[in-house]
Length: 298
Image 1 (tube, rainbow, N blue to C red):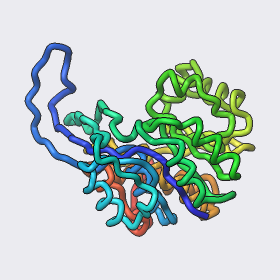
Image 2 (image 1 turned 30 degrees about the horizontal axis):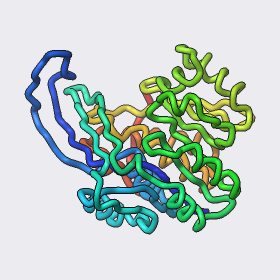
Image 3 (image 1 turned 45 degrees about the vertical axis):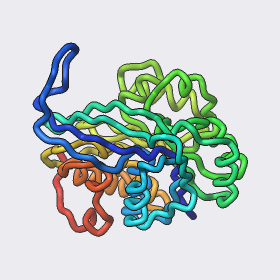
Image 4 (image 1 turned 30 degrees about the vertical axis):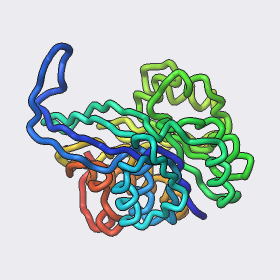
């Protein structure tokens, strides 16, 4: 089976700051860097580094050539990445504070200019049983889900960022929801993560649900049972790709047929390694590194 990541490709401009900028404040950064990013690109590379056969679909501008190079270097297929010569690629402005926490502003650019004809062209190369992984950083998400589901593909959705369009979408065809506790609270209307989990299970009874909870680990409902796993001890440097790394390793674990706790353990360890290093896609560890690294659970 193949994984198709239909999602965003961004140029990330990352600023290291003492604290997040406040209204009316001018703040000097301690460092600055330009990186490849976008939740789609990050998750595609995470899936590949975890060991999956991965295809990226999306759209970039001519300023995004290095994003293609990054994907190719990671051995992710770029056959389904379209190039629009007249638009800017999507980009993100990322503040990372001295505790490794981040806040992000994104601009959609070409990520929000994908046509239905391009979507149909991409999906024609995939079939029943393949996994399609999506986020909410591109346009026509609901149409892609409908068409992929009609082909018998397994639909994995990381519903980020949350917006009105997503809240009003029919998500009943999603096979796997993978989200953090903030996203779970917004979709469910419940601040308490356990209550949110129960609401989501009732609202989407056909779906399997994963919620990551920062320092409290993760929860996974596999359709029959709820599984829980903690996090591993590391010093956080940059949490930018934490969730994307978890998602990639989680889906690869499903394809490998691992048991739920094995999947969650690998995803948690890979995520811990990622946050201990700066950057987004380049901080995601390979499978051999994850298996060789010894970490203690908190």
